[in-house]
Image 1: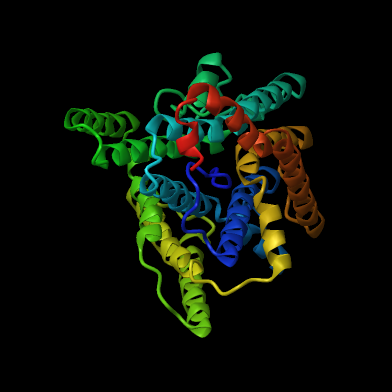
Image 2 (image 1 turned 90 degrees about the horizontal axis):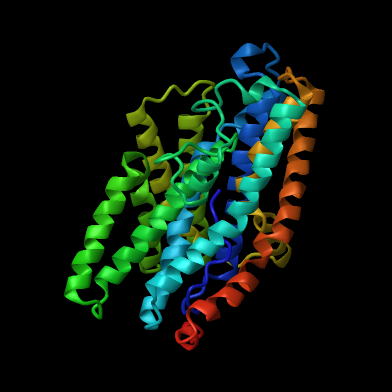
Length: 391
């Protein structure tokens, strides 16, 4: 899950409409929920081919647990749109500062990530030693879990998947490395393109871009265009449409996006090759970008809807970063994956609600304080730039 809720690096000069902002909030909340629900189903219920209980209820449960991967792709596009547009506005106001931009981005990530890593260490250690579950000793996603301090620090430095594996059972952390390095690339490219940047510095920054691309490798760089596609959607001119035209544009783009997800990801065993998986990710990002552009033209929304969307989106990043170790501990406590009876499906829904409230509590403790922490740290690091930053 990816952090996109609090993104100000400069004053907003071209606000999203309140309706568009609410729609994006809803999408963020649903996307984080899709990732958590897929992991929850995978851990607590047997796989679809392993059961003959193919009732309408189980079909819905298993279908809803198919969209974790495209949800992450949606986050990449949204991040490029929101973070990138904030950077563009900062440049337009003459307030761009690469060090300050990187400070904002690092704080935004680390304020949630560091507690998540420590909680993951706690839950994984408890499951491994107190419950003695085989979940912690057998291969986990890409290999045995690693709770070493080297791996913890590597994840905190966003080199998981590059120099170290994901920390413990928290396989969801792979995408945070992508996010961080996309942030870095964007900051380097913007600074390189500024007219005020000296030619010699431009060459140095361009070299750093190449080094980052080489260091992070194919797995991260192949999805980078989707992040920048989100920025491209922001840069497109808006159309002057009637209310009916706005509804049609949003309906068509949404149906195209959902139809592709249903075709590409709803099978019980997609069996993608690497090339097919990359292709599916790219098509997902492109179709969602079309939907995102339609959302920018959204008609006004009701107040209650906007309040609801904002509420479920609030702990998005916290939910993404914290859910998996807690769910693995839950499965270690239960001890066995269950058949998808009606009762077990309802229990699954109940555990999903529990994990959401668990994440919301962590959000109140850490993520909700991001602005306060940033406002305390930034003047100490950039005292001369503070006035410019607040213009």
